[in-house]
Image 1: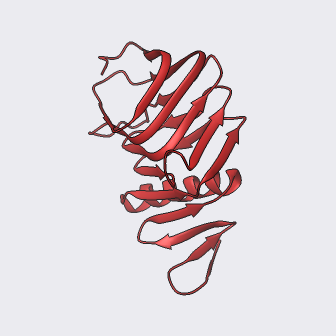
Image 2: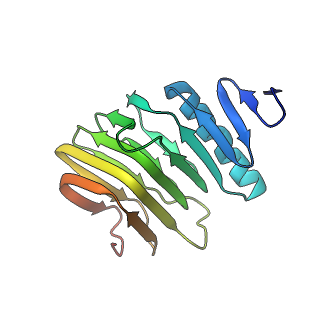
Length: 173
């Protein structure tokens, strides 16, 4: 569990709790740990959480899930890069990506918007200041949602052969 260091900062494994719903990660392992703990805190307290990711290149063999009511925030589009062969980011409901670059070089989707059971009343997803590149016939966004949802895209750059695909068929964006 956590150890106190200087009042508000607590360390869980190597992921740091910065207090007031903020977590910090600086490598693949601490990112997964911080997302897991932030997701549990968001669910327990019904309070949004933010995981701050330091600058650097992060390469994943498996997808990374952003839990309900959690934001993953990088150090800037040019500073923080997440890369995988396919299926990089799984976004659960009411989540956000901000200030980073996502690169998927496989045939899968760079970002998947997930349905969560039980469904929440407001299904919202945000991409803010995110560069997304899907190469090799990859899709930028895929959805597993069957109902209505909101997708906010703010100041982001998207490069891909295909932008959207949905399973099951969703109302679209």
